[in-house]
Amino acid sequence: MTSKMGTLQRHLRGAFQRSIGIVLSILAGVFVGSLIMIWYKQNPVEIYTLLLKGAVGSQRSIFIAMQRATPLIFTAIASTIAFRTGVFNIGVEGQFFIGAICGTFVGYAFALPTIIHLPLTLLAGFLGGAAWAYFPTIMRQKLGISEIITTIMTNYIATHLISYLTNYPMRASPTTTETPPVQATTRLPQFIELTRHWAKPLGKGTQAHFGIFIALAVVAIVYFIFKRTKLGYELRMVGISFPFSEFGGIHLDRAFIGGMLISGGIAGLGGIVEILGVWREYKNLFATGFGFRGNLASLLGRQSVIGSLVAALFYGAMEAGALGLEWAAGIPRQLIDIVIGLIIFFMAAEGMWDFVKRIKWVRAPEAARKSTQELEV
Image (tube, rainbow, N blue to C red):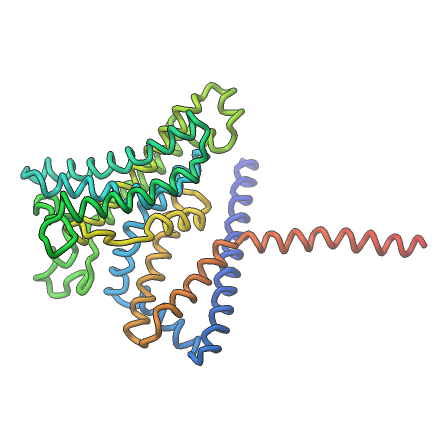
């Protein structure tokens, strides 16, 4: 009983210390952002008030934040799986796009009942992302080539491959660089579509959709895998220590490849969910940056499943707030992005507070030692 209480106290103390670090990081970002706003003759109090109101100040803001966060949840979880397996998956962006284009093809090329067509389309997105992640993984395991280099290059290749596909073989019309729309049997319903006739429809003025529930289901499944299954244990152990894992009988190649395939598959699933819920057709480079922001959200969440979810939701709220701020105050989007970037930067640099504390702890003994030496002299 005593040991359990001690463990609980340690967890609570760690959570409290982490909360203090996050608060200090946000305050540091707000302070530096305020200085920039004052330099450009803007009122920091007004801007931050509007930013907060645009993030969570109304039903519409909350649904915009949900819409923005949905693809980030997929890419953040995909990044987290790779990081926890000891792989730095910079290729989440390309896997996201490849999953989206593969699923889009299945979504418009076949006419099937919804109960078959929708799962098949989602599966195509997952498999497309997983296949795109397979090549850099094999090159790392079999040829020793850094996955950082190969995944960056697969992003580049994916961008140009999809540009070719949407401009030529999959192009819907000569005037637009987009595919035909997906069949109605594959579309994820938007909240406004289902509640249009209600007295107070949900998500009015937004494209928030049921893909958020798929994203949350993925979070729950991945959390369960990491915490309760042999596969999750192997992935975690490989990420912690290669020699220990190999000594314990874990097949390193299988764990690396399995972790990377799951990571790429979830990124691809996020891509097709975004198409089915928001766009309903693939527009050339319909959105960029989801993969890199997912990497950042995972790092902000310290590569934990729940932490990545919270970071993705926070990032979505900040983007919703930025939109509201731009509409309400007419402030240049570039200035807003700088302010949000500063807040995210200081949150990502949360470890600097530990560094400051370590300097303090190191200097204190040194000061005491110098005082003792002076007394001895």
